[in-house]
Image (cartoon, one colour):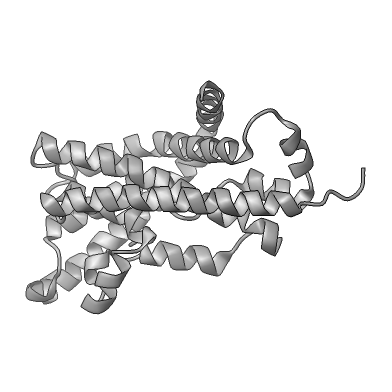
Length: 265
């Protein structure tokens, strides 16, 4: 386990060096956050009764989403793993004295943590300074904050395990980027519009999928849209999907590695 912890630390340290890229991404995130809030504000003003969330909860959802964008988005997985498979360097990876699944998992998680660490501070600072109802509010209680942090951690692990399944599928498809798969996952995770805005039968079904266990759960817990027993059930569901995706990823990798053929020399 110490080897995996070292890999996580190394990847975080390496990722923190890319400050210019993080600053460039911040401009996009601020623009997108303001655009979303203004668009939903117009919708809320036109028909408050049809709005499925408290407006302040929605604003919190958007700003926390932008602050932890790289932590919770289904896209942006371990490109190094995909390059290793497609380019053939998987032969060298298999010769290293460390489990391949664990190595890729912790490297992917470390990369996401590093990118989020560079961006979340400025986003949160600006969001907290904005006037109501467009600014970010603190959780109403320490218990809600603790539930949010637990759900955020599980959300990162679920997204990472999902990214591993996506990366391992490269063994079978030899495609560097499964765009349709990742975009659909982002949509069902609440990346474009929060799940409460989905039609009721679809929303109920989506909330049982692993996609709702990604950003949907921690963002809605923070804003208070999910609380109490619902939050406990949601966090439990995140843990269940983490176990399922991890087992599925390991099974896929075991089957793929038994069939790997290295050509050339």
